[in-house]
Image (cartoon, rainbow, N blue to C red; front, side, top):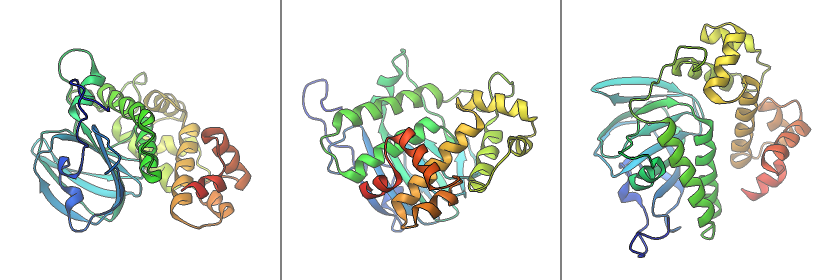
Length: 300
């Protein structure tokens, strides 16, 4: 990402390459990638206030990760307005080169990621041009973790982490090109291909709402209209994880957000996120992230 094909340094991607959402008066970014020299991606983390506006087409693809929620978002897709109640971890995706008509119906913490089309096409690498889908409230655990990792680099202001950033951006672009392209089926009805997007959203929203409580698979299955065995099989096909593994990841992600943004005692935080006790959270965090809650909080 550091050099153009001519060998000259490329200009940094910046605020003027975005849709304009971040230039609204009610949006004050907490941190951005400005000044880090990233040519193919611009990252901004902020609190957004409710609004309804239309934005002109931008040269970059827009990916928004919801850090909070659920909150209702409306957007125009194919000439009609569609609404979706999106939980924390939900994704909003808008392709480059298209005007955007969107309404946010509640205050929300978000990470915006703007991606150059050149890095997306390079990641596609199959001949022809790949076109991203317009998505509202989709779920992709890999995309979520990649965006959070890039936000982490921005938080620490690590100019020397360019190789790591290149790897994250390339992986994210490849995942977008593989799983979030226009014309790709969104609703999947067979057991072999997984849950429909609405079923997956219903299951995830129930997990988010009940994150501190024991949540039997039967209740998740009931929310999707499936038997427990059908649900477990189709859930794994959709996410690559069992419901238990997925819920554990949501709990860990929620714990990380609270460790970054609150001073809640770690024992209370662990219970709030659905862990049996502080030691349980510590074991999971050490196994998944190679750190402890206290060390993670100190590093933020």
